[in-house]
Length: 102
Length: 475
Image 1: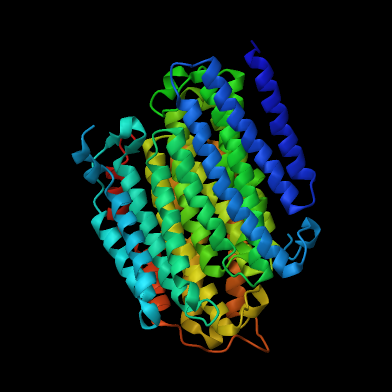
Image 2 (image 1 turned 90 degrees about the vertical axis):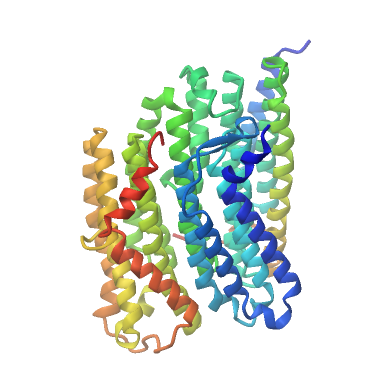
C-alpha cells in the first residue's frame, strides 16, 4: 500500500505549483487554473488525512465535498467576470488591466 | 436534537433568510411602479431585522456544535444589519439611475446574501461552517464589485477581487487541512485541547491567518484593496470597507482567542508585526493618493490595523473595544462614503481630491458633515472616533504592548495630516470649477443624519459602550 507521505508530497507540490502559477501567469484564465490547483491540493490533503489517520470519522471527506462544490461556484463567478472583461477590452491579459495603479 | 431551540438560537439568520425571500419575491412581482419603492421596502425590512434582533439571544449550540451563538455575536450581527441598512439607504440614488434601475433587485439580494454569509461565519462552531459562511460572504461580494457591467473599472476590480479571494481562501484551507491532520477534529470547541503548538500547527495557523488577513486587508495582504475599492461602485465600496471588514475582524478575534489559545505567543508576535505594518504603510500610502475612493481604501487599511490592537490582548476588554470601534468606524466611514457617492452621482463621477476644492462654498452642509466624519476617523476628542481609539489603545496597553501603542499613537498624527488634506481642500483651497450646488435625495439625507447622530453621540453616550460590555463576558 502507498504510504501517506507520498500523497502529501504530491499535494504540497500541487499547492506550490499553484502559487507559482498564480504569481507568474499573465492571463486571467491561467491564473484561475492555478488557483484551482491550490484548491485541489487542499482536497487531496483532507481526503488523505481522513483515510489514513482518522478512518473512523468522515469529517475530511465531507469537507472535501463541500470545498469542491463551493470552489465550483466561485469559478463560475470568476469566469463570468473574466468574460465581462473580455467583452470590454477584447482580451484577458493581465498587462491590460492597469487602469488603476498605486 | 431538539428542534424547538432552533428558533431562539438562529433568530437572526432565520429572519434574514425570510427577508431575502421576501425581497426576491418583491423583485419578481412588483412591476415597474413597485420598483420605484424598492429601496423603501428593503430598508423597511432591514429595520424590522434590526428591531427583532436588538436584544441578543441566549448562548447555545445547534447541529452538534457546528453552529454556536454567543450574545456578543448577536450584538455584532445587529451592528452589521445597521450597516447594511445605511448602505441600502445610500444605494437608492445610484440605483434609480437609468442604466442601473433594472437590476435593483440583484443589488439588494446580493447584499443581503453576503450579510447572511457573515452571520453564519460569526456563529460558526466548525471550520466547515466557517468556510461556507466566508464563501457565501465573498462570492456575491465579487458580483457586487463587478456590478457596473459596462464600466471597465468595475470589471477590472471584480476580477482582482475574485482572484484574490479565491487565492486567499485556498491558502486558508491549506492551513485548515493541516490543522485537521494534526488534531483530527474541525470543531472549534475540541481543537484547543488537541493543539500542541508544533511547527506544522504554527505553519497552518499562519496560513489560516493570512486567509483572514485578505478579508480584513491587513498589510502584507492588502494589495487588492485599493484597486477593488476604486473600481467598485461607490455604494459597494462603502459596504465592502465597513460591513465585510467588521465581520472578518470579529471572527479573527474569536478564532485566534478561542481556537488558537495554546499558540497565543506565536499569534501575538505575528499580529504585532502585521499591526505595525498595516498602520504605518497604509498611512504613508494614503498621503499620496489623489482619488478619494483609493484614499479611503488606504484609510480603511490603517483603521483595520487599529482594530487589530483590540485583538492582540485577547481580553474581554479587547472584545468590547473591538465591537465599539467597529460601530464607530462604521458610522463615520459610511458618512464619508455617503457624501462621496452623492457627489459622484450629482457631478458626473467626480471623485478626485482636486474636485473637492471649494466644496464648502457650494454645498456647506455636506462639507461640514464630511469634516465631522473625517475628524471622527482621525480621532479628535469630542467625536466618537476619539473614544473608540482610546478604548482600543487601553485594551492593548493593559495587555502590555507599550511599544505597539506608542507606534499607533504616532500614526494617528500622520493620519490626522491626510484627513485634514481633504478638509483643507473643501474649506480653504479656492477652485475655478467647484462642484455645483445640488440637492440630495431624502434617503441619503436620512442615512447621513443617522451617521451624524452616531458620530456625535456614540462616544458621549456611555450607555452604548456599557451595553456592549455587558455581553463581553466569556467573549
